[in-house]
Length: 198
Image (tube, rainbow, N blue to C red; front, side, top):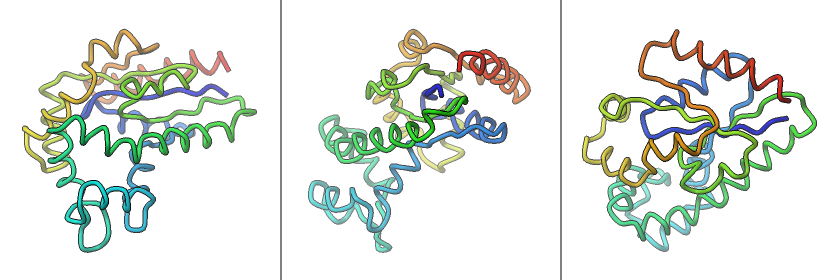
């Protein structure tokens, strides 16, 4: 087994790459999905969030009000670090536990982690792939996808490591600035290259 971290800034196209990898039969673990499990009704992080940020951050249905919390923490580095202390450590452990269940297999296992480099999780992987795209295109994608404001997207981008630094840290860079055919062709070549390393 090879553990491969998959990352990219918000709106770069990580999910598009993940969907294609799953379609090809690969396991892709999703850090965001694990985070949502922790912050849904009855989730492990809910009591911590109520204690430190107030019960107004929890919707009437018991789930985290993600937009309200994002508006709060992405403008305050201390609050963001506090929130991540309740989620990031747990997510990292869960990802590695899941990956290690396949340690005797002769395949590639992927972990889609938005803050892979920021949280030093890339050091737990064998290799790391980075998805990049033009900033303007990323912002437009997220506004359209999440029905959110440009300000919130810019706040999130400001709290992420810049793309140029990630390129230096990554083993492979996948360019998502063109069409799907161009994107999938890059992925196919990488899969062929890395499957030989297992």
